[in-house]
Length: 145
Figure 1 (spheres, rainbow, N blue to C red):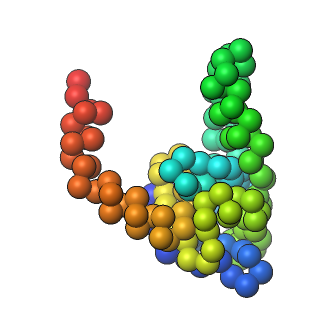
Figure 2 (cartoon, rainbow, N blue to C red):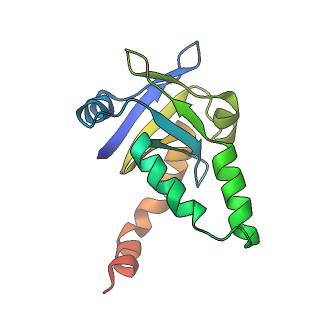
């Protein structure tokens, strides 16, 4: 659903404009709102409402008697915020999420199929630089059937 890497900036009012391709996909799939939360690897995860609800069902099924499940769910859901893009496709990320992802001004908005990831540009460059050389090795391990 969401694919590609796009470099954007947070404007003076703290808003981020979603890439035009993502706005087109959202419009074509009747997505009017998103949910963003703390992601992994110091980025933010953002899901269309329908996908967010599917994720919520999955995570709610993990027994809360498991300590790690409680910690994960607390951090994941307490960080969640509902976002509705304005007519120009801008969203306002809360400061606590920008702080978590170390986002100042320049960001990378990355489509990862069923979700959008929002990275500080520096963190994305670091992640990409550290990961691209092992891409084929990872593929072999994950795709080994």
